[in-house]
Length: 337
Ligand SMILES: NC(=O)c1ccc[n+]([C@@H]2O[C@H](COP(=O)([O-])OP(=O)(O)OC[C@H]3O[C@@H](n4cnc5c(N)ncnc54)[C@H](O)[C@@H]3O)[C@@H](O)[C@H]2O)c1
Image (cartoon, rainbow, N blue to C red; front, side, top):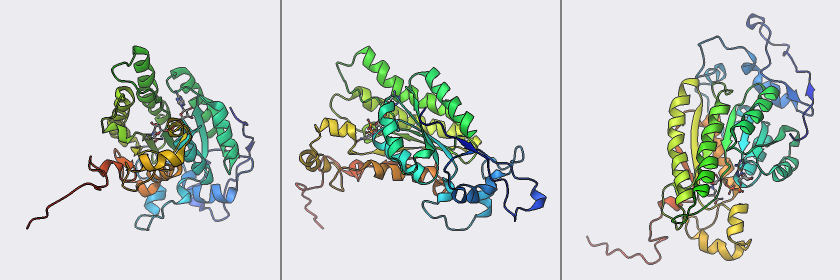
């Protein structure tokens, strides 16, 4: 684990705390260096124990604000909360982890590349909110140990983002080992992380899985990767159905081509050469940035998305709306009346 946080005595009450509500109970301890004004002011409504069997889907906090406009993104949805980002050591997961810490959420990064994950944590504006855990999401024991470590520290997990992927792309030549690895990380890993972490999620929590445009299209030599992405999109709907009674929403974002280390590798690092070629696959005519996917993930995690579950949000610059005609440079239509 990266830089174990020091626990500091919590602030227990505001002078104006209504006596009829009894003493407030803090949901979780927080770390040294935390800005209490940011963390505790918005959290006080959550500090009350919930009556058993009541308010499990719509927390008290939402009822109080019903009818009021919800700003996108409301920092109150994130400050003092706890998140796990699987695959947060690079690319889309890293951008999401950094954004969450900016909003005051403590983030546990689960990644096989701990060196990269520690660099992400170190570069986050609020690095004291980040911890790094050496986890291969396809390894149930390591996953369970890391989840226990996070829960020991934060008592609950409010947000889960599943961004890790094996990019093994093979078709006719796919070996049994290729299939085991790609299914183990992308499909079974996503399922295992949702199973293990949702057990610690209170009502009002949210999960975002990362799918892909590849879930829907034919691409050369991609049986393995594309099959797993289609499985994630479908599995998300089933997870959403099963977790709805607990007040947990589950959605999936499907990015187009995003300039991350994996895509950079495919371009041998030469973005000026490949951006015009791959950019054309998108209506917006360019590649996406990891932060643009992170923004969509943050929206789906937030209360602004409180009636959105089991949905696939395309974050693809219009990729999936294009046909084989592309942007239509060679298209002709007689337009006869
Ligand atoms: N970059 C794109 O163009 C693009 C497009 C569509 C979908 N996606 C999806 O977005 C997600 C993130 O992709 P990215 O481009 O940011 O990739 P990336 O390689 O930059 O980041 C993936 C991270 O996952 C980690 N990881 C890999 N296997 C793991 C495992 N078994 N356990 C734990 N961590 C593991 C890696 O170490 C890495 O830090 C993936 O699910 C990918 O399929 C990416």
